[in-house]
Length: 240
Image (cartoon, rainbow, N blue to C red; front, side, top):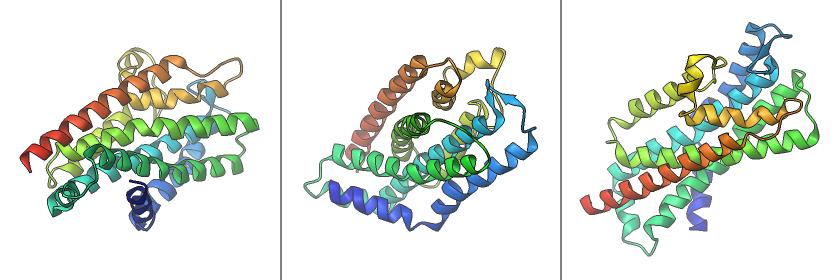
């Protein structure tokens, strides 16, 4: 399984589309947003530069694992690669875990590049806050890696791209990625994993600690998505 994880990571990092859309694009969008807003404004209780640094880091991380996993698994099913792996000694759970682990590792560049741009634009956090925020966002990306695996098994190869993009953009739109969620919309956003993902940054506000409600919500989503991925994998095995 370790070898498969290494191969998955190397294959992803060689993908130029990945490098642009999950690393360069979120950083460019971050620069756009902080210049579109006033530099002294607040967003979601955080300075604008900090708020959009987090939201664009999560945007890149979710894109990296969700679209990458779903599309790659769907194409591998179409090409027969998954069927070939089933003929080896590799257990099905190892294949699924390797996909989640490999894609989660590749989220680090998208998070760290946006953080580097944020620091260059004047975002000021303590060393412990920088490390804690990077760790929280990286661990949170496992939730969307599992969702990507589930969608990869749920959708047909010809339909997976639009399904993933609609899911991705809907969660981002209602999850505080493009603008702070407030009012009556916030009640619905509590059931959106992207909203909870962005809430992990609230501990950077003075007098606040890590939002344990958001952590618990993400843990619940992770359990649901992993269970869905396992169920869909078994269904795909029976149909193969």
